[in-house]
Image (tube, rainbow, N blue to C red; front, side, top):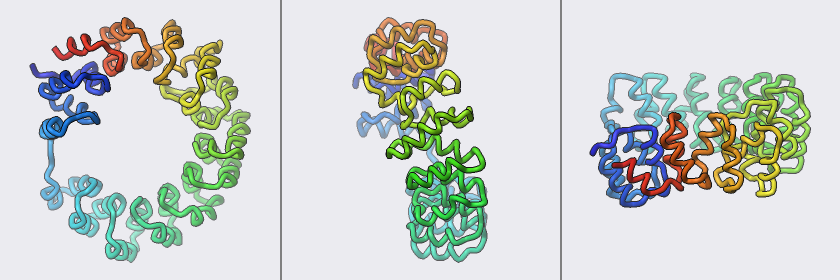
Length: 356
């Protein structure tokens, strides 16, 4: 029987507890869309990988390389492992979009880098500045350009040497400062300076920067930012792993968090989880639903009166009672059903029923 894609079957395709016999049946009968879901699994045999790959629509890189449509060549230019010969062709393409795509995405030979560095078009310089494969020495040379777009690209490139970027903390281009505030490799005094930026964008990006959690001064900066009255800043700050639990409890009821596992919740101890579970604020208690290893005695109470997004998160909880998982599976909410189908505690009998 052909298995046609649905949210429930897509969830089952990701279930890590799927028995090998059922996985084999799933692979044999899945349609193309489900095959793409199954291909993400890490427990496939070599034969199963070949079967699934054979169902994927394949494009011929050699044909794409000479395709008259530049949009096709642009797509190829950012494909991984296309080979040095194809890169040489694409990086010399007469269409500027194709050329810059290759210059941005691909590892380039030394000779090709030298050739492109002699190109004075700002689009080419910006493309090189974005390339994560280039050595730091080349990126440092690009930093000597006066073009602001190139500076933004370098500030966003994790390979760019920090010592070249630090003089830009007071850059006249606000987008350069914002990009610097998002980097995770700056010294803490740079983040302190960016947190005092006259425009709020840099402050917001500093507030969310996980690097602040790595040092005492960084965590002290998080604590100071938690006293801000800027709602947009606080909305980002709750995502910082360095925030104190008390500050998180205070802020969450007044900002929009979204259906995500906050880093501070991810590393909370068992005792801290129980403190949060006893909070009088439903927004604080809801944070726990996204913690995948939540203790069983905390899961069931969260179900009572939970909003839709929280229920979807709880459907994936390994410690959710089996009867609740099955209820989610047959419920009207497709996303919750998909999460339940992916739940490793889903009974094998239910898995068999879904594949029958």
